[in-house]
Length: 343
Image: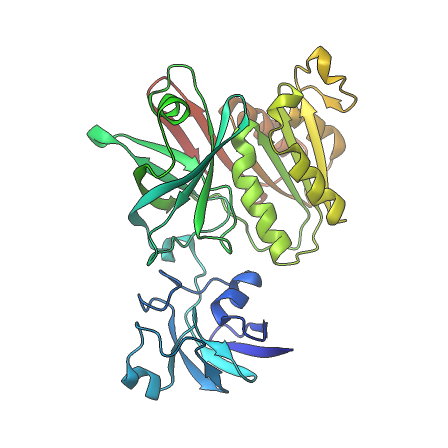
């Protein structure tokens, strides 16, 4: 069973499943309501029920007063539809409308995805959530005013944890700590979300090109598209040196197997002898340009080392791709800093 929810003033209409919080349904449809805690405490997702009936499975949320409830106000992170609805809520339409927060986090788990890549799951406080768009990044705040930026590898609908893919850089202060000293339940401080690398609303097919751990923000984007049941064609090109560096190879293959509109093309620049590699080899941007000689009708998302981004921009604009359809996230580690260039 499901209900229709018409949202004012945007005019959007979504389907809400029985017992599904209205905020969850909105996020599933790619519609961003403002929210903070997702537990009914902060009041950020406050809106109004114009018509129809709702209920709260766990009684009136703490963040909603009896007076506001009597006036038809609702907290949509907790409210569940009992009929078709018309509601009023301000949707987030621009990146600048998302609140940037500084929060404490706990290291929930550490898992090596490759010899030099660590998956770090960060647990947010129980009463907090970090609203973000797929593809954005956070800063990890260190001592002496230093910080390190890492892309969020999970999608916004799944925001209890923040997933990071951290590559160990020789001589890198923080990445060495991650691999040698960081433990589960360690406390860190983060600031975010940041960046303008996120999915745009478009009917054009999407090329997503990642280099190394540049796979991380693309993972969040693809998971969001799958969650929204988006059927646009997506071509994921992942360029690494050897097969061992394809640290989520099985996951990407699974996406392609389960979704006919998702295509996975791994590219190795220096395959090892033991790889017995039969797939694409060379530079990943050259493979993309070969496969798509006319890119005027595409959207391209690139994430990875600056040299890859620079080469991609040159090749793809020469193939007819306009600046308005090209989005990139370039990052490069040095011994003690992380340089970020967000476009």
